[in-house]
Length: 478
Image (cartoon, rainbow, N blue to C red; front, side):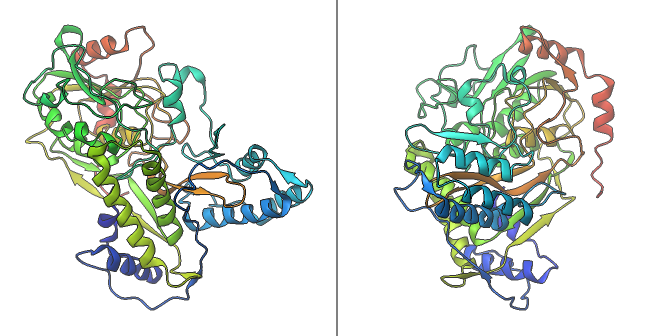
């Protein structure tokens, strides 16, 4: 989801036009919005994390310093958090006042206790929102913990820890890419899968182990099975092959796309794959993007933190550095002075339609296999492909972490307690997604061989419910 692309849309609101014009000036948009009356600048405080200070050891702080960090957390939410539709971005003044009294009632606050207080104060059912700290004993507290361990039974502990990743051009909270290993079975189409050669290696991945990020094999009765294990930008070398693989899969009468355990990443890879499957018009997800200095600084913090940790493969470094430069230019354009900035603006896009890029409709039958590990960009892919006739979703409920993405990372300066919050809100165009519940499958698979069952389902054909869903996926504006 490119920042530049979203800024090219003119907005009727004066403040939005002003902020977008400043951003376009920084990013070189081809058609900047019309000029708008200058608004009063907003108060600004920098939440940029100093180089070398990422994941530092947290500190026990006095009540006075905890109060000041609480105010910085409130500022981060007000200035950067996209929030869930229909819910306030930050707690009420009364709720904040109660916690301020609680902070004053204790002389000192340990990092874990302070992180839990912030989690309880700011928590909403948002699958990406989290609180914690780094250091020797890192802590991460999800605002919306998993519903049930059974839904994550096939997901490793490290994958669960990375479920707060977000879909963005460079998603700083995704795990790095895996080493590519040879497929378990012979690749279906050698010309489209040459990059799966075991001599081609990427850096190892904590959450994928040594499995390839993309792997094409044959399942039961020769049905092609494409496993997509991440959309992390660090695996761009592998993910760039997805449109070509989609073109090959379209030639098969039935195929399976295995998305289990895919915690998300760069939505552009997911969208390009979906568009390569069909020529039909698809309704894009509705979105609301926060434009503010704080949001840009927080996204830049995410990228800089990942670079500082050294978990970006060498061949992905140019993409990360390019995204970081874009975010820093954006923050600079919106910063009007040392203590003033352009006001926060939420840019909203609804009812957008994009046409598939394939030569014709999808003629085969496709089963997308999912579980509780499918989150963020993985769920955004489902929001698109569920509109394609002939597509069936099978398995378990997905994670339910899609509504607020593009993560900003903040580290409160006194305690070192960290915040992970989304700066862009998304909505499923068909209205079937529920945050923290996810997408429900068309067919639930609970057996010991879900891939084999999915292949058999693809050969059998789609049940009527999936056909009715596809028929209702009109591209008309709601």
